[in-house]
Amino acid sequence: MKKQAKAELKQLGREALNQKLAEARKELVELRLKVQTNQTKDVMAPGRKRQEVARLKTYLNLQENQENQA
Image (cartoon, rainbow, N blue to C red; front, side, top):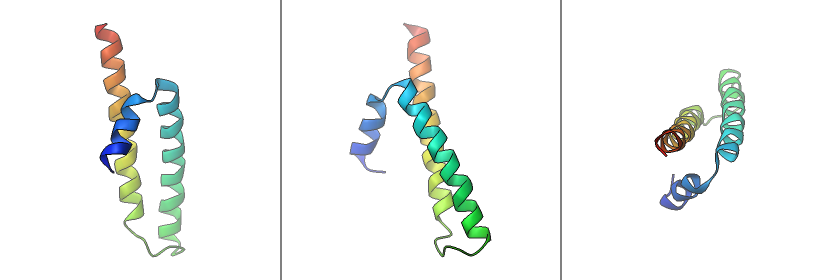
């Protein structure tokens, strides 16, 4: 993920991050299914999507911690 995309994630609000997280989780399930049924040759796609999910959860937790401290 590029620096611009990471900076963009930092600027998003909690609602937008939750929405992106839900979409990413749905895409992850679909990618796993496609790999298992040999519909795609990109076997690394689920791993990259899993990293994206983790990144989104990290930014959500950072925002929650900042709100709790304030």
